[in-house]
Length: 426
Image 1 (cartoon, one colour):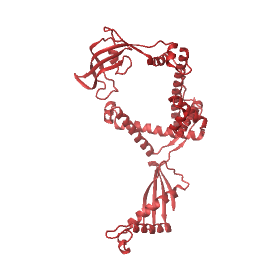
Image 2 (cartoon, one colour):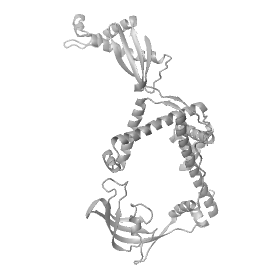
Image 3 (cartoon, rainbow, N blue to C red):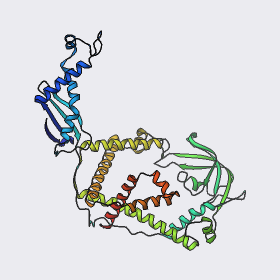
Image 4 (cartoon, rainbow, N blue to C red):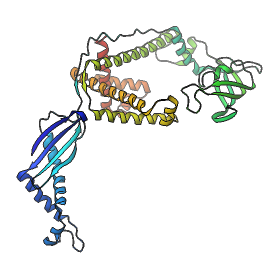
């Protein structure tokens, strides 16, 4: 066998070519002919019992060549793979019979080129700045209020009372546009916390000050709503059935006892814990954003050759994901284009840019992992299991039967990468 390789830059593809000729090909053709004869089926004769003279009439060169090709594809691929190749595949090579004759068989193996990357600086980058984390009293109060929601009291208001922000209102409603009811704009006995922003902007604010009984409010649907309703005015007829005031429990040590949080016994400790939790979450968010911005900077500093086909395939995958997301929202691509005013070309350009960035991010982070050789210890894996066990309230031994250790290793390596980039830059 003979081997050659070729890089087709303009197509983002590579090609391995294997040629089988001489005695090897002659012997293969003989074996192929015997196989064809052994499996030949001729009307009036049993398989394998066909007279030679009769069988020869049905054994065409194309049948022999096809069988010989099938016999040689696997050995030819093994031969190509055993060579010291310079053109490396990104995916499984696809065999194609390029030439077949009495003298030789030429098989081409086509594949997407493996992306090439020359990693730029990824340490001591000062162009991306780290944000400081601050936790406000308002943020702490908001989280404490969420805890208090577990023990909230609802008390019916007087018949002549008016709706206030924070009240729970039970009501019927029916929406009209140009005097006609529209689909999905009606409900009976709906419960709504005024100020929770569950309804479109302006709806809940318009209910403040209303009392029991019938009323009408006018609103305009926001721009990002479904295409049939976006930016359009509507009138809602309401029948307010009941209004209740919501009373939060007192924020004191008694609340903390009811919450029964581990290692938290006083309200002061509870406030400290809430602040610590918020700080951790905001710090992680800041770290993740910093690393994302940093990776984009490293991409700019690196030389990356992405095969055209790889970008096209990734773009197609993102398109499928995007259309699936639209479907979950009750939309399709036509409705989305109508609502946003975007063309197919604009959507494709955006998805292509995202696909390119996703592939470049993968290549850059993979290269950094390879260079830094992050080590995953058994202690780190066990600690991860313990954290999951605490998070879900399940024994660690049980978690170990539910979670793939390799998946955990991948998460740990990613955590190590994020920590490394954050610590060595900015």
